[in-house]
Length: 380
Image (cartoon, rainbow, N blue to C red; front, side, top):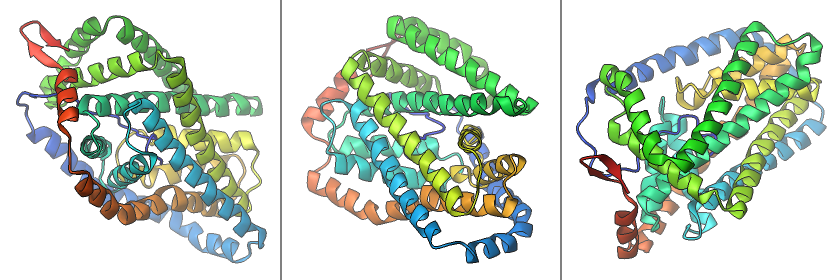
């Protein structure tokens, strides 16, 4: 998924983090890394019986299928550029050039696509690279946090629209109905939380630290400083979104990001010969991406494919056709950006070398914006 499809937007814009128990988070990372091959292998075993049928479908595709596939590639390119435009909108007037932001986003997305639960590592890398282009750490962390929240709210809207437009076909299954309730609850919580953060950031910071204390004591992660940095980043981002121009630009680019990716998904299905109604395609796309927010495998590999193919099969699309279309979409949505990350990574680090790292102005700005700890908690 594109860079704003950040599914686990844990960012840390703080300074002076205290010690924490690193063994348990490391153990969790090792568990995810160990289980990933088995989960991917299970997905392959489940899809294997339909692989031969999908190959036959691919062989018999008409020439027009290549046209649909080519347009899908262009739509995915639009999705990637829209995500970087949204990143620039959240970074504010001091943002790097669009080319540099796009390259940074591609490299960070490549890291997220390789590591199990790699969204946190990807966010940290993005912040570190943006810092080399004179973006203060708190500003980069705030942009990442705000972008993830807005992007996930937009994804929830896409999913709910798919559910609403297909409800007349007999209503959603109990599992989908439960997921709809969860998405609605999260949307309401995000709205109330954003309002509270914009008005009373100090109170929200204290409540967040207090409410997450049991989890932090039992799991050892995230640290209190991470929670504080996340809330401060949201507060800074919400303050920037008070500008109608910034909010409009962010919503427009995030919406374009998801819409272009959805179009690529639908075009790949059409190229594979699927004749599913667009409401079903929207539902399959939204459901797969909502479930992909659980960072079990790198880039939700196997989970996205299995969810999308199963949803389309239930809607009447032949499994072989659905498998071919979904795999074609994942080729341009997951694998091609990963290859692009390998290509642009040397250029990113070359640009950083020419740029000379962080300037004194950026370091001074970072010191003014970084939260500082006092006896009463964290202050700005």
